[in-house]
Amino acid sequence: MADTPSDIARSVLRIEAEALGRLERELPAGFDAAVATLLGVGGRVIVSGMGKSGHVANKIAATFASTGTPAQGVHPGEASHGDLGMITRADAVILISNSGETRELSDMIGHCARFAIPLIAMTKRPDSTLGRAAQHVLTLPDAPEACAIGMAPTTSTTMAMALGDALAVAMMQHRGFDRSHFAAFHPGGTLGAQLLQVRAVMHRGDELPLVRAETPMSEVLLVMSQKGFGVAAMVQGETLTGIITDGDLRRNMDGLMARKAGEVATRTPMVTRPDTLLTEALGVMNMSKRTVLLVVEDRHRLVGLLHIHDALRAGVA
Image (cartoon, rainbow, N blue to C red; front, top):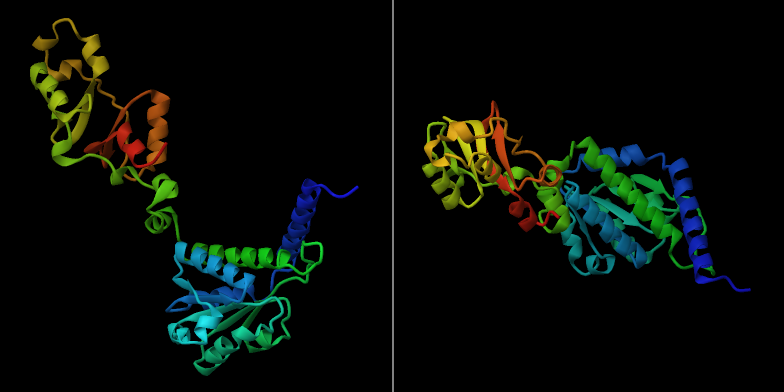
């Protein structure tokens, strides 16, 4: 009985997983030296390959760029027709070729030699033309391709992509690239929203509904209505001393208009900080069933107000 598509899929995944296991165990001896070279580059990391290796090269370049390492994918064919000018003495080049004999890479190899540009090879054959020309060779294990005829680039491209990820992650960690840097390079979409801090969307300055302890409740209600957040923040100078919410109004309905803000306010408001991730602040609001968090820093100095709608508008759901 012929294998089902699911049987074939499991076989492919098993073959590729085993190859990645080999790559971990047989991590190229030149890996640390290659990372050191890339960390010392003053320009960009140029990544290139032909065919499927070219697609892998573009992905690796994109991963470098998004994790703090300026990088660019260059097509070897275009390089031979003028784009070699994109590669400068300040750059380093990573060339990907399973065989190491991809003829379309020859002009890029020559360019690197001519201008003493550091060249890193990613190949199965360290004794190939590419391997011999490179300063650092990242040798991929000679693992079988996952296709039935053993020729379609499958396992080899998976290993190359994984090794590129390993380079990028090693470099970002050595550079101290953290969440704040990552957010700067990923401002759009859901990922960018997840990395936003409260300070990016909070209300501040004249937008804040501020009252003092001695403010009559008639004025407090006017402030709450004008600012539109359903709360008033009670302050002494810049220091937050309490909050007045709809719940506080209901609990003090009898004789409310004869009272002062300090007699009605909750003295221990729930707060957050400007550098808190927006996702974390939204989680606090959901758990506590609140729609507003006051934002403080230093010694309870009020600096902003976060409304649940601000988080939702930013794409944090």
